[in-house]
Length: 410
Image (tube, rainbow, N blue to C red; front, top):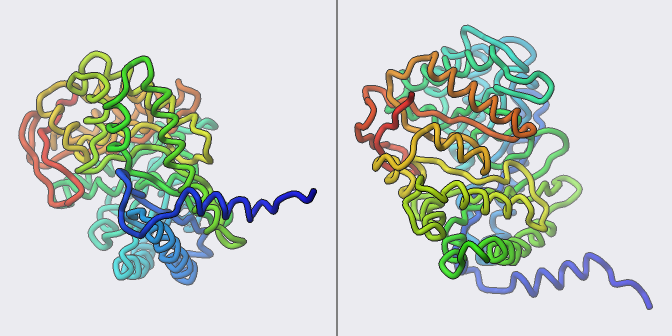
């Protein structure tokens, strides 16, 4: 008896699992399809156009099966690997040309880490400020810890100066939305701003599915929440994986799904956690719920990549923002939750007069936590709000961000 052709088997499974009309029929979204490309140089717009062409086809493939695709994105190798030498005004001009293409095609791009290894560059904050004010769709990061070096003390100083400069030189401090300090973050993360790429052209998928977790937890308790979550998530993600496998080809390798349940303004991970705990986020048992979700999403029987951890972005989640306003948790407790969850400190509104030394201290703690837990991928995207003090309400122009009160920094 002849063996069945594997591609035929995959096609049959895909037909069974993904059959349906193009209307949105899921209680989760594809947050991003991110293509990773290695640019020949900073003027390599040919590779950018090829990536955009691939992403447009990939997006339509998923839409045809009923999935909502929020965004498509591109990540490149780290900028310091493209630019051999100092970052100059010419570098910004070249990135502006790429940015115009991105804006026209409604695509965003991450250029990875600005500096290599552990470096302090006294002019980097000024350069970043000019880049932010001359582009709109480009994000970037700075590494503050790695397995090889440990804590990047010099980079932490650079990161704090960048964070302060973006707060002071962008409207509402929202320039920090496009910058993060990353600790042990791997290549292939589809989420921004920590994303960067290595190797052959590839793509990864990021999901927004807190509403799915909420639905699961409505019929779960502490005894069966873990098993229920694993069963349903695998059922929902397998068709995505199968569909992604049909898209990959000799030019585009499939890296996997970043199983992080990215929240949105109408998809709250805070609500999901409270559905299980029956208490406001930040209360006792919040840590336990975070641990359960993280354990499951890190052990799903699918090809995963990136963070694959629990995201708790304060001003991207209405319930997290509400509980912060109600002072149910602190910045330090968010870092504690990161020890059992996922991605670190994300979009945290803090006083505009937070000192550079205080920012360095927060980055230092994130780096230490990352190294303590076996080089855990963490990042810190801090939002010092200009002109605002602890407890004051802050609103944002960015439609992806929700109002909150400024949190205290000890």
